[in-house]
Image (cartoon, rainbow, N blue to C red; front, side, top):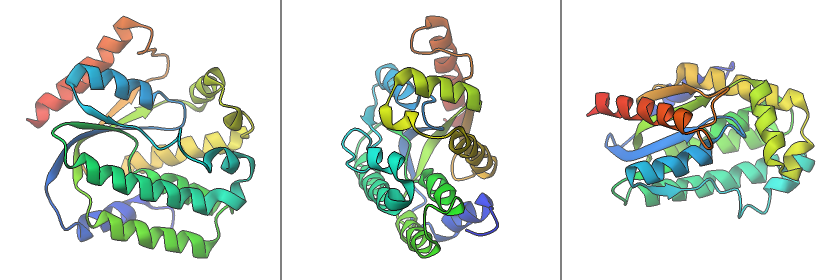
Length: 225
């Protein structure tokens, strides 16, 4: 993927995909701290889906990465790539699945690390080649949900949940990450997309906000039937 163009990435997926079957799965994506896992848990109860959690809690590299990005950038991305590919293969086997991130959005972090000098060009080229090979065999989800927010709101939520390794990250990294997400989803065309602006929404504690988000998702799903 060259010249900061995600369109090239998505064109590659559409050209090389071998299976046009639509996977009966919803993917919730968005920047760090935006509420992906919380929304996934809500939708799991609402729709009776099987949840596939992002591989964070059992990840031996994640906290090390935030303290030394250059040392752990490449092995961390390979860890995520491997786990997310395995997760998708498992999700294909169930009737209804919902995922907290997926292999599709993984490239956002890899490109961010490459452009920031934390991943060597040779490492990024290898990562991109592995990703392209995997995506040949990945089915598209029936719906991608992008939780969109501001950097200020994202940082506020990151501080609130209090993971030590996230607190050491400089603001510029979060700003760049949020920009990458914006650029990524401007070009996203792999599956139907629902963008939900979640700044100022508390769909965990506020019932009105939760029902508003659920209705947006239900309405979108109805248009896909």
